[in-house]
Image (cartoon, helix red, strand yellow):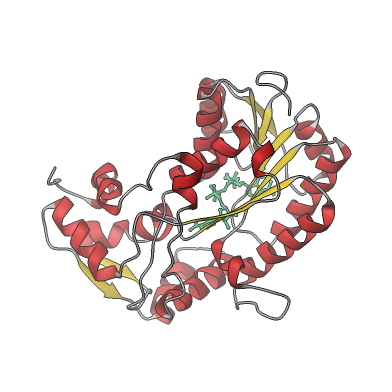
Length: 308
Ligand SMILES: NC(=O)c1ccc[n+]([C@@H]2O[C@H](COP(=O)([O-])OP(=O)(O)OC[C@H]3O[C@@H](n4cnc5c(N)ncnc54)[C@H](OP(=O)(O)O)[C@@H]3O)[C@@H](O)[C@H]2O)c1
């Protein structure tokens, strides 16, 4: 492996949405003393923030060959991740083809935990799950030195982005997750796991890491955590899937993303997200962020006072 500081580590999807892996990972790798080349799709205040952190920012598209040559040249280690998109497979294979050309020594691929239960005869109805499964297949055929990271659902997605308004405005945790248990993980913990891998990739090449949160519990449990931390009663309401997806459509969420989220809702209700591993602890030496700490951290977004 290249020693630290010899060449930058390429972090894709670095601008990141709320709770994005890429920008947390960029900060963590810089903290560890690495140079980071951060790939962003467009120049905006997020790319400026990455520059202020100390990253070299490259603007480009993951599906574009020229962009990926510019981004990859001189990098021995790559983190590949991007937002849920119909172009996911094309972007993965484009990035992998260029990585092979440049002789990359470690390629960390962000996937999803549901892929663990998929196979050549078993899929789900989510278009994104299928693209992740195919992307993993293609990377396995590529001969690249791949490390696969498969997290479960993120706290920042369902519990913050998709539920904060309901908690703030109606004191309800309104999600289409039925009575199933789930072990949501923070994207910050996922970024930390990836930063450990990229700091010293050699022992991880060929490994698959399934990352879960602190505990697996049903939504009534999480609603109680919200109530205790925020100091007012928050109730879980299991929203019918059709009502929930109608709301997402009105909010302008792309169809590919809605189709993916709605399958996640269904699988939750079936208990398919009731899973726990110790991979995060083994990788980072730290337990996952608890729901309690997560709600405390984001209390302002959930509204009103906090019971410390
Ligand atoms: N959210 C969850 O619950 C969950 C659970 C398990 C696994 N995952 C996986 O985690 C990954 C998402 O990670 P994340 O939350 O860190 O991503 P994210 O913040 O949603 O997106 C990362 C970035 O990808 C960029 N991007 C999208 N298409 C691009 C393209 N063609 N070229 C260049 N950049 C592009 C976006 O740029 P713009 O912002 O400019 O559009 C965005 O900033 C996915 O693989 C997802 O399946 C998510």
